[in-house]
Image (cartoon, rainbow, N blue to C red):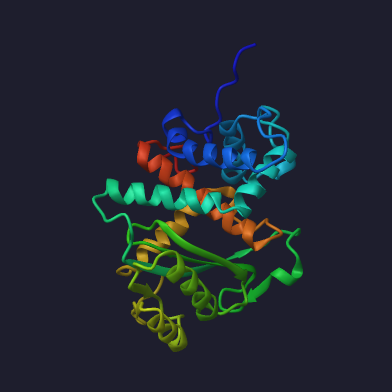
Length: 279
């Protein structure tokens, strides 16, 4: 039987080599700590990861996975395990350090840019997990992210859209300080209030507001802040993130990590994939 051609979202050999050691080590730990150690694995990890990437890139429901991949329930089991055990966070950190080194930067960031994006939710998202962003007139969820100065993800927090930027940002700062103690500088927009700035100071982070010229209308590229806006643009190339389809905020965060894993592996290998802009 002829081997079907790969989907555009599938991992190339070069991209797979970047993430394979982490997934192989995860499987080894699982097998060593579970009854029946030594039983051969039924599914190839690369095929599982390809299926997960397919869902993130195309936005389809899990049950709609093509039959070229393992059963959807199996794929989702791996996704949930990797989400809950921090594998996607680990991969994001590994790839970010590799990209920074390739760009001649220190592997660990010393500065970040923080912003938030409100998105609509789908019908399957529990009402209790949604909110209203009155300023943007969006009923849904809010994604607060911190990136380094290259636009690479450092931390993410998904909340109801009604949560004020400063409140969500304060929790994000705690995650940032825990996971990235080398960060000492942050740039934010005017939506982040004094108590956010004060909380950053208690964590040893100098948070600076980059103001927007009130006389300017429409979109304007602002120093420092454009970096995080570009990152939101990268995320939107993944249709699973065009809305928030996830019942759990932690799943939404995992999908964002996956989008960045996809972006960074392509950046490291010099690969691109077609999108609506034809690039």
